Length: 116
Picture 1 (cartoon, rainbow, N blue to C red):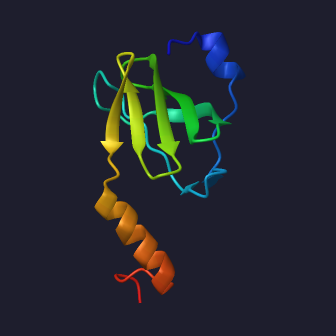
Picture 2 (spheres, one colour; picture 1 turned 120 degrees about the horizontal axis):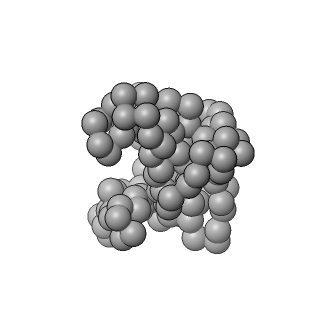
Picture 3 (cartoon, rainbow, N blue to C red; picture 1 turned 180 degrees about the vertical axis):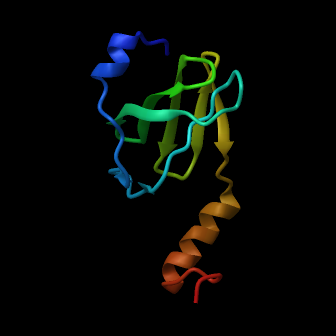
């Protein structure tokens, strides 16, 4: 995803928390410059909701590099979390059968074991 300065300025600033239709809430988002590693400022973007996932596209300004850095993530209803990197999707959080069973058990128990 490549954007121009004009497109960036026209994007809405992201405000938190972001509540997704899938039930997930993003309380904070930190972007990092792929060139120098500095934190991005003034994050702007959009969330598109689909049947099976939420697609988050955003951009931020890297002060040291004086460039716009774009990011794109997908959060799936089953818990998977992916990042677009060089035109390909990379899994950041993988959902296994065990994690699905564990999530169901915790839901049935009505609590998360590490939170009293």
